Image (cartoon, rainbow, N blue to C red; front, side, top):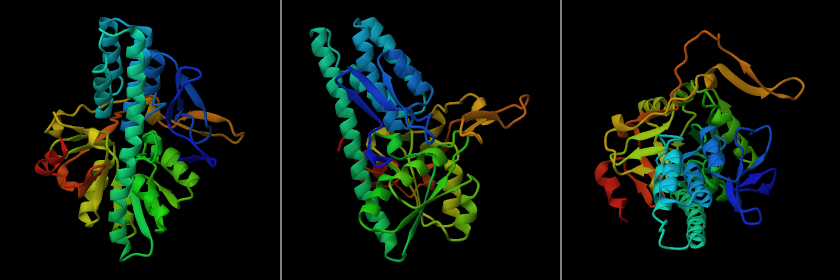
Length: 359
C-alpha cells in the first residue's frame, strides 16, 4: 500500500544485503524509518519492542527470524533454543507460533547447511506472499458485506479498533482490506478510528494509512463509540484478531470486547476479519488464552511532537500511581456476527469453524 504515494510492504527480504527490512512502526506517523534485521537478536527486539506488530506481521517476522537464527546457529540444540526465544516474545498472537512451527518443520540436518538456508528463506518469503493473498480474499468477501449495506445507505460508516490494516500484515490488512476493496469499487466509505490507548495504534497507524490511501476517516476517543452507535452513525464494525479459538472466541486489542457488547445492544453487526492461520485449533475455552501484560510506562507516557517539532515522551500520570496494562481482551463468540476469512464468511460457532480446518 501507499506511504507518501510510494508503494511499500511492511517487511521484505533484501537480497543484496542478505537481511530483512521492516518499517519501524514505533516511529510512525511522524517519521518513516526502514530498519534492518540481520540476526536473531534484531528480530527478538523488533517483536518485543513492537517495531513490528499485528498478528500476521509478527508471524512473518518470526519466520524470517528462524531463517536468520539458522544462519547464526546451525546445530539442532541452538536452533531449538532460538525458536523458543522467538515464541516467548509475544504470547497472545497465535500466528507467531504457527509461523515458527512451520519454519522449523523445514529443517532437516541430513541436508547441507546452504540447502537448508535456501529452504528456510523460500518458506519465509512464501509465508509473506500467502498472507497478501489471504488478505486480498478477506477484502473480496468483506466487500460483499459492505455492498449489502450500501443498498440502503449512500455512505457506509465503519468502526474499527486498533490497527488491523496493512501495517499489521504484509499488505492490504485484515479489517481494512474490505474498506480498500470498497473504495476500489467506488463505494463511499467513512471510517471511525478508535485511537486505541495506550499505544494509540488507531490514531497513529490506522488513520495514517487511511490518509495515505485517500480514505475519509475520523479519529475518536476509545469511549466515543457507544455514543456514535446510539446516534445511528455506525453501520458496521470490523476488527482484526490476534487469536481466535476453535469455538469462536476472539482475543484482540484491549477495548474490543466493549465495542462488541455495545454493538450488539444497538444491533450493529460486529465482524472479525482474520486469515485462517489466526485460529488456534488447540484452545476451545477463552480462559485458556494467555493475555500479555505490558509495561505500565505505556500508560504513563505519551509520545508526540512538541512546539519545536521534536518528538518527545512525556509523563501523563503521577509516578506513584499503580498501573495495570493488559494488551488484549477476549470477546465471547456470542457478540461476533461472523468471521471474514480468506475462505469465506464463517459463523462464530465451533460447528461452522471446524469446516474450514482442512479445507
